[in-house]
Structure formats: C-alpha cells, structure tokens
Length: 156
Image (cartoon, rainbow, N blue to C red):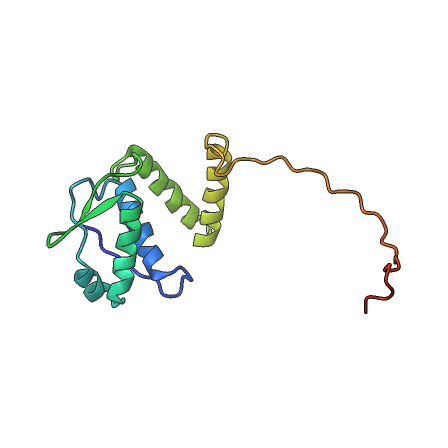
C-alpha cells in the first residue's frame, strides 16, 4: 500500500502529486498488478485533501491504463512501470552516492541538478522524440510596405 505525502508548498497540484507518487511506487515495485490502492476516504483521512482531488488522480491513472476501478471493490493496479525494484543493487549505490554528496556539503537542489543533468546526458539519445520534427521553412522575405492609394479614395 502506498502512503501519499502532499507538499502544499511545492507548487505541484495535489492530484498530480498523487499520480506521481503512485507511478513512483509502480516503478519501484512497491505496487504490483492486483494491488489495491487506498480508498479515497483513506487518502482524505491521511492527507486532508478533498475527496474529488483523490478521485481526479485515480481517474487520471485509470485513463493511462495503470489502474482500474471495480465498482464496490476499489481501485486496483492493472500494470507496473519500469524495472527498478526497491532492493536493486543500483539503489544501494545511489544511496551511497547521495550520502557522499550530502556529506560534501551539497544541498538537495544541487544534488537534484547534478542528477538531472547526468540523466539528460545518458538517456536523451536513447529516447524517441516526443513529437515529430517538422522542417522549418525560412521566413518569407520582407518587402517594405508602401502606401498605395485606394482606387475609390481614402478608406478612412
């Protein structure tokens, strides 16, 4: 089961935080197909968010095909994401690296910037473009506009 933590100061919409945290749990193997998500009421009690916000997040996850709502039973995981289990040896290496970064005096934002930069370098070339590239035509040459008399006099 996933425990949602809402950061009201993050600037990220609450329903988006719920979607992101669910996807993270799916990627880490903390949620697997067949698992039941907490009910909207349970999320509301734990986070003090509006029930409609929870339902919006669950609808978004359902729209993406990650979960399915079963009337009277709850919302269940349909499929997982990624292949990075929480007990991966790579996670242990990353934990060690993060500890060293903190010990060296780096702030969270510094570490995030470094990690994001490294991710971009290593994964950018391996991903398909999000949108097809449309060739850009050169701009049409600009000709100076001259005032031409209207055949029937001044239009003003």
